[in-house]
Length: 287
Image (cartoon, rainbow, N blue to C red):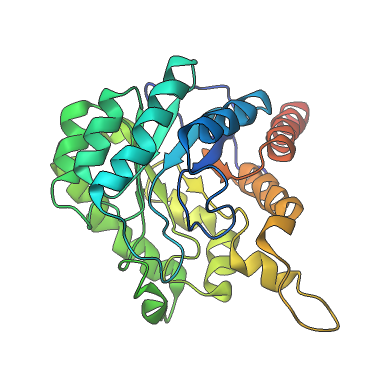
């Protein structure tokens, strides 16, 4: 059932449908495309291709958050993301910086980024919330239980939906108390972060519980391991490679858009860009 048009985020595009965020990983070790766009030139070209494919936003990140990943020095993260953010912003893109570090967020905003996407929800860097508030930037706050090297050991829940909601509530309060405008605040349930496949499916099936927190939702399921597990080879049981899960990712995007998600974050944009427009047109025709 269509949940209605998504809540808007002040200062960002408002096309009256679910937005599409294209992923630009400027890292050597991201789970599906690490190393492909590590240098600025290829990363910028990739971002421009995503724009041409229909992306509304581009999310540029210089730190892999795959399970077990080791954090890069801050200097490396800055060196990776700043030229890409600057070039894509100058090309007219609405750029998000994917970082857990306040210093990187501040530098990227100065370089032209308009959104901070923090997978730690402000827990990794105590200066992050105040930095975003001072900049007046939109902020994506994700459910998080710890850094990549230990998060899989923390994937224990009695009721994952209730616990994610309960753990997000104080983070929302902290963000607002720090001065972040509620109209700038987006929530992300953190699929795959300290969550196993059944947890991810439960969260996707009950997005209405997350909507009850009163903020727009970002859904980031693209190419994650639970999709590869679902589509495993029926004979060998071997999970499907992440780069072969884009059709399934687009299916998730379709369902998330119908459930009222503000934005979906994807590696391959074209099919999802079509899908969210189909959902919006379908809904318009049903009214």
